[in-house]
Amino acid sequence: QVQLVESGGGLVQAGGSLRLSCLASGRTFTNYAMGWFRQAPGKEREFVSSITGSDGSTSYDDSVKGRFTVSRDNAKNTVYLRMNSLKPEDTAVYFCAAKRRIGSDRLSYLYDYWGQGTQVTVSS
Image (cartoon, rainbow, N blue to C red):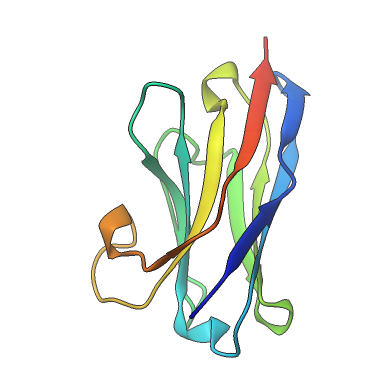
């Protein structure tokens, strides 16, 4: 069992930055790929970024590539999402998730554990 707790969301002006954190419980953090997803009102949950547990390989949706950076600190059981040059369209609830199953890190249904989400609001 893995429990995930996100933090770091908030209200920021367009062009600003935020760093989200996701703290994971358990002793096998490195066994999990970690993903960040977001869901805006009236929209489906969408992939944002992911990072593998083994070699730290990263992946990004095209909409955030070059602006967001995912990283993890395995000693602290924490994954981060640094978000720069934020846009109003980045406004959403951001979720972190953990997965062990084989398959694309972009597919939300492959993730076994989810955090409760943290709100990010970008004003224009």
